[in-house]
Length: 176
Image (cartoon, rainbow, N blue to C red; front, side):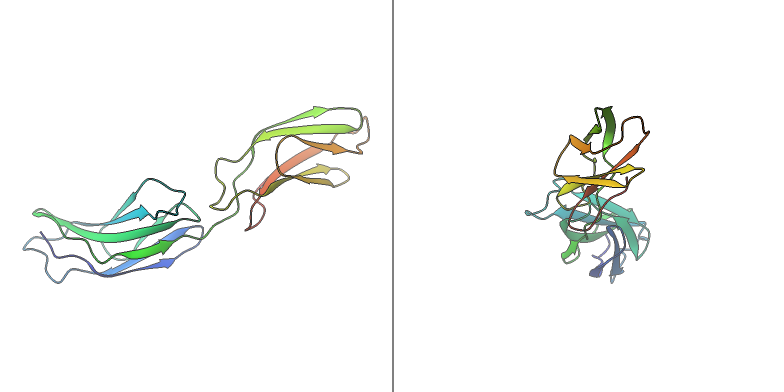
């Protein structure tokens, strides 16, 4: 098998992507290196529980990981004779992003009110969702609460309104 990749470093990219850089092994084991693998194991304090393996044919290897998580990463080289020993371990911390879009939004009209129900987004962006914002237009009536349902009051009966919902975390507001 080839020698282990050397000097594995990670640079954070945008939207929880990471750039994995490494030097090729000092020896290829007598057979061309076909692929490199980067194995990212979530740290104990990470909300992610499953390791991630990324493959590439050369350095750098760019990949997206779950936002707001910490991983321990190693690199390995692969050839027809086998798999190298692991490189030294490096820590990868992905930055959190805004949450995803709330799902299954429904509106029920009332007397000068509307009650908006929804399910949380499937992605929290790697940071706990702190609340939700509902915006009613026309009139730009905004209501902030921590969970569904959210009731908007002070609406004009007989007026057609459009309601948008977004989730908010420590990074900011997600899409509506």
